[in-house]
Image 1 (spheres, protein in one colour):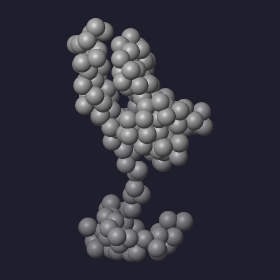
Image 2: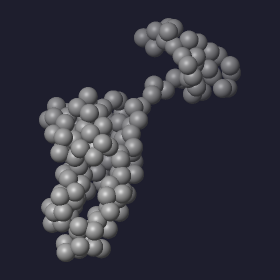
Image 3: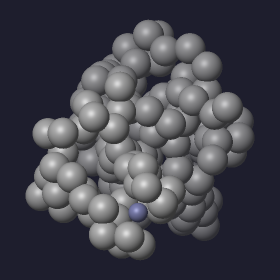
Image 4: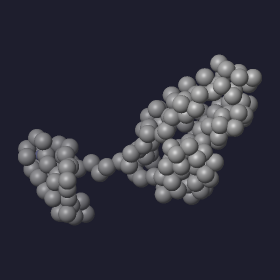
Length: 167
Ligand SMILES: [Zn+2]
């Protein structure tokens, strides 16, 4: 079973926040903490995102060779992951990074200063929500404002009663 389910390490969450704020060096440090703390598939997620952060850091500093090299390295970790891992849109990130590096390669080392930072997209991520399965009919239930409703049979409960269904 993939351990891409479940929640992100707190330092990974911080790393993604920093990444999306364009603080690539700080993002790299936070993701490194998460990487050190984790085992299994999540380790590859954190390492891959970390290397994209470093590649982008190189880009913002006009380091052509560094950016291309670290980007190539990141593929080893990110390409083996599902499209979404722990709520992180991995495929979207891979596509965005590929476009950014493609643009860099189009410009070449001499014209790297012309690189448009608009190519450095934020990472899309969302904590995975709990999936509620109706205990009467087995359908997936819908949660809104703490009311959990079954679209199939109308079964409903309040999220504060969850311990009745999930113990
Ligand atoms: Zn139902």
